[in-house]
Length: 238
Image (cartoon, rainbow, N blue to C red; front, side):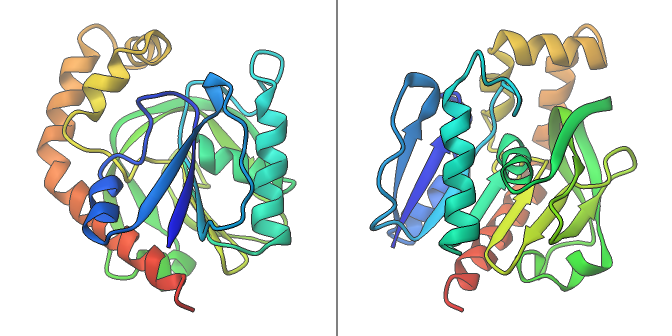
């Protein structure tokens, strides 16, 4: 088994999921789109993971590779019907690529916040064994405003109605970050755009407070990530 990963900034990688892949002996290749990497042939890849990033789905002038990326996502999910996992920007790109829409999040969600599984989410294979209410790291000011026509909404929060969704039987995506690990907040806080959004939303000293909150929730976050990873891998077995 081999996984293809689309990255949009160096520090937004599969995070804690990397260790699970290593434990299972599963190889993965990162495509650094922001560095100018070209999307390779899909031959030989069993799943596509699309990570987060500081750009928005409509920022095609500054990041023209977004056009090819969205076309590749659509081909992978809709034409090939192969397994997909999208996180944060990867969630928004899935929606945009398949006919949904994204727009500004009226109240940016940044912090360790609660999401709630919908009734469909409680029954979905990806969330098997996870809590119906989960604390997770949010860091976004854009949301999926309208899901693609055939999407099933799996999770929501008080201010964002599409926190997770499934397309067909092969593609899942989440607005929040299940992949966090102990150094995630420090690494992301070093990106000026992220740090500014954090200060704008939560005020001076927000990075220190967010680091404290994630450290408190880390055990639960890692446990949830392991369950979601395991469930995703099991969906690939049919």
